[in-house]
Image (cartoon, rainbow, N blue to C red; front, top):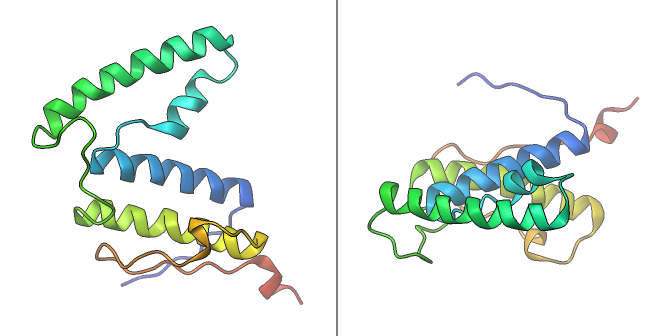
Amino acid sequence: MKKYRIELSEEQMRLIASCLEDVSRLASGQWEMKYTVEEMVRGLPFDEQIKRRDLAEEHLKQAKKVLLPELPDNGSKGYNGTEFIGNTYQIYRTILHQLAIDYDWNNVYSSEALPSGSMGTIKIDTNEKFKI
């Protein structure tokens, strides 16, 4: 399989992790879309933000009933429920684990991602390793 190297700023890496976390959770049945919805309402007056988030949550619950009818309202498939969920989990979780190492976080991301999906773990190197 061909491999690629992508150079990202930390901000870009965090954005990718947030987007992949949202889509991974969405596919597993956790339909809050926390990061995406938060960005969509950013800049609006606070009361309007709350109103739109609540309305979006209601619509997302309805969509969940159509796409995942077997799951109860608060149910989900888990981090490795399908290959897609497992693969997206593996990528965002590995990115956040690297940030935990870089910033000496002591939280859930301090440990490596659980085995999941079918694509394997991504490799992340910091630019400091490549400086001459």
